[in-house]
Length: 318
Image (cartoon, rainbow, N blue to C red; front, side, top):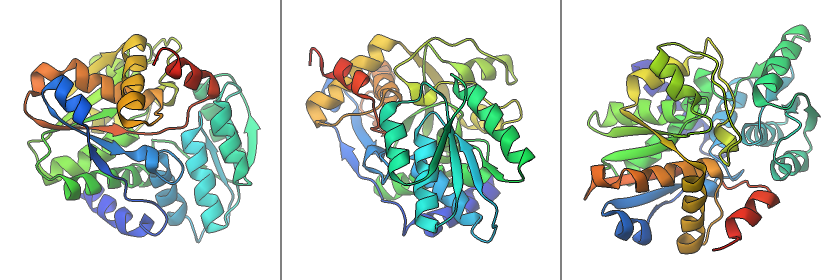
């Protein structure tokens, strides 16, 4: 764990010229409604509209002496993060996306001038293909989560959180592949062993939760979810499994109605559009409010890149 913490501290210095330190904003409305002191870590203000800019930048910078091209796969935000890092460093690469990727995210990637190719309908299928393609063509595959440099980059959020609010009692973080929560938890647990790490997942795609219950990485059936950024299976050899198993204190599953309601709360009271995956973390704070009465808690607003269709759904009935 010490090695990962050291990597996170190093990453914080390395990526600082390329990314933003995002605000930690007190939420008057959520605090009043829950009885907790609620803060929002606004990664939707990040350079690409998502926390993924951090891990991608740290990984690409670590490869600056390697002349091979970069290959990655993503449902959107990781691809956008890699595209941003490639543009910033002048490296070349290709982003593979599932055919059902968010239009908003696809357009944002293309605007960086980075090559995009589509393969498969799910993130898992796309990832498998991209990894095989990179190996066969002797290019570098950059995982969205199964990579220590990527995890270290995401962990820089923990560095900022501890600087901004060292007395934080609990942090709520959405889980897909586990890179975000693993990095944040690794740093915050080393800085404050008493902090509670709450893993938040959509009930329609509870992959890491079910894997932890099973004691190993398994294939988990999924249903469509507003939290598209956390959907998809995880690598059977992922290093995030053990990190999540060892560092997360509690898990909570969130329904689609709860995700939508949370997205609307943030839009109404903070005037910000957030992704479904960010809504999962906010909904978890609301759902667990009795457990954290009077405590200082934060939810990571992991991104703001939503499609027009989802945006219309959120705005309707606000």
